Image (cartoon, rainbow, N blue to C red; front, side, top):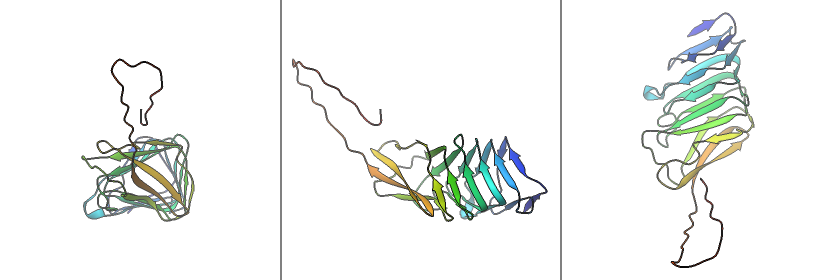
Length: 193
């Protein structure tokens, strides 16, 4: 356990040790993140803890490693310039993808960056609960990494009262056939572009 006598503003990189607790001002303080707050992949899914009244990700990146668990004993809020990065390397929570739990609740805005790593290829029907526990309000305004490479699938984001879940679904495909020597006009579009 590491404690601080006052509030913390992180403008660089702050990496809580796995299995450790960072206590901010006797659990009554605020950790403001404008840099990178990284919870790296860890052995055996050992959780990291932040004891603070609030963790405010105003314009930084909270990155949850692929086998990490971050418990915030307080609230988590993410501003419109903040990013929540979820690394996915498989379908087992805290073993091949990470989770965050804010016991006082999470207020969401900004960007969700879905980082599919190590050649993992999710299949239609796979589910990833990236925020688990506490109340959840708000939504991510921007979703990055929505289309994992290689298998024509997409992540959908579901916001429930107590969690945020990613669900993989297949994408529809359209085939356009053009006859030799034909004429005419039309429009072709695709998603993703």
